[in-house]
Length: 249
Image (cartoon, rainbow, N blue to C red; front, side, top):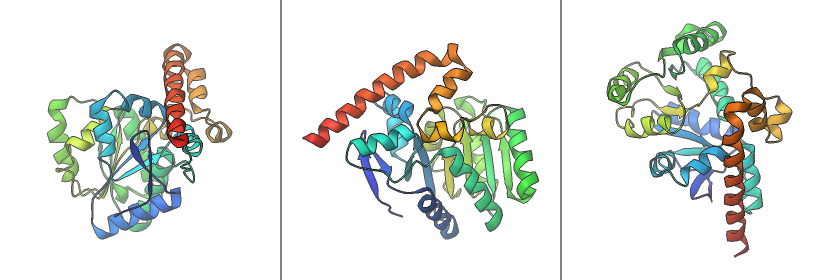
């Protein structure tokens, strides 16, 4: 299933709105095909420039959406404007609702036992237990990947959400793509389970729209986050400048 893309930061990012992305995924599930999805933000774009495994894993996905507002802005500066941001957590929420309306089943993988259980309880209460194919925490080593992938494959899941940090989630999905081929849609969702479970607060909408979610994170955890974002954002600005130079040439 093809879709329009733009090449930015050596990655083919989907030139799609949220609605168009949802329609593609819905059609893929109904047709029984397999689709892998990933989102990119400024931090991931920076990491991909030096991490070959992560870059390969990301670029192997069928749909790569721009999760960060900064990536959307960069596309406009580079003369390849994306229509809007497609945030991973918003896409996940929309897909859970879609699953409830179409009798799709979801497997939730990631976070702690407490958090993933809370997520399952919240969605079961809102949409019914019939949408749950299975779930487990995200604390496991690479030696367990085969067993976990087979458990998911045998769960009857149409959709798999993986709430594990980068680059582990991208690499897990890429390396187990053959085993998970009968799961119609797989998606890495980062820290989304923590937000749904109420463990972490999401930035207010106005901060999201103005690309300030990183600042909200720094305010919540200044000692841990300030250096990461200072260095990461500086590197991202440099990459954007390089893309703009390509445009001028």
